[in-house]
Amino acid sequence: MSEPGAPAAGGAPGRRAAVLGHPIAHSLSPVLHAAAYAALGLDGWRYTAIDTPTEELAGVLRELDLGWAGLSLTMPLKQAVIPLLDEVDDVARATGAVNTVTVRPAACGVVLAGTNTDVHGLVAALREGLGERPVGEAVVVGAGATAASTLAALRDLGCAGPHVLVRSLGRTAGLQEAAERLGVEPRFALLDPEGSQEVLRAADVVVSTAPAHAADGLAEALDARGRGPAGSVGGVLLDVVYDPRPTALSQAWERAGGVVVGGERMLLHQAAEQVRLMTGRRAPLAAMDAALRAELAPAV
Image 1 (spheres, rainbow, N blue to C red):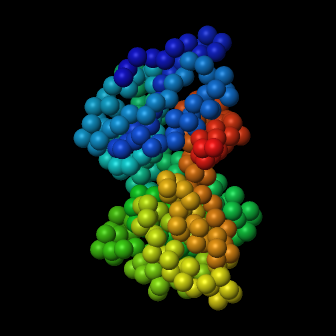
Image 2 (image 1 turned 90 degrees about the vertical axis):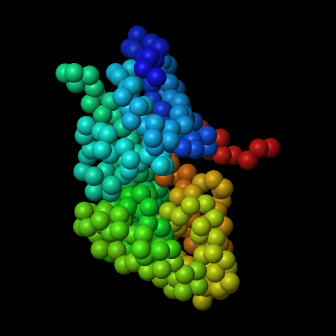
Image 3 (image 1 turned 135 degrees about the horizontal axis):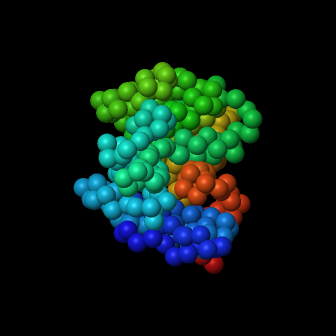
């Protein structure tokens, strides 16, 4: 774990970075970060995927030294990592989720600092679909860590009172606490595929943070409404799920006349912010985007 990377271009030492989670084999982060390092000329830098259950996270963090630039974190580690860090920034503290750890020198070893680039990724991805249109009404589907980041993103886009549709109102305590820290006042309701249609169709933005296939019922209800004016939607949907891709919900939303932003766009933009934080250089977004599109292109 602790060996530094090989020399980088220009003689500067290379560094390591990795994405941690469990499971992790599906992660596209290595594709994105490797493309960034290549475009930036960081020849000695390496980025890998390390399968890390929650109980092994503390041990991995203890082995980090200055040969490491940082870590990307995915589920189930975004909340578990917080008490293990030396510093946590305001956005990560408010959302209760850290997806990025950077490694800095300290008098006695290193400082591990946590932040949340998912908020940046969500805002940038939604802007791809919205352009400069304002966000009046918004809907969040789900109540997990990504839902908390979505509340922060919607606040930054001008919506501080989104609807939040959940499968169980009894499991929203963590999200309600995050909302209070963020200064957001969400309106919670049970997720009902048929009964939720009116609020979905009236929204400028819908962000589904539900796991794969969990929103399929919403897709079926959207299709059941038909494709005429009475069943149309006019807002932007971001479904954070990118495997499988496209999701049933995104396909139904598009058939109903709405704009769809794929979950891979959030992934791209949050990774670009991670690259900036870990390397200190502006991320080569075009190169990362091209690598992502090539990776997701269907096999011929």
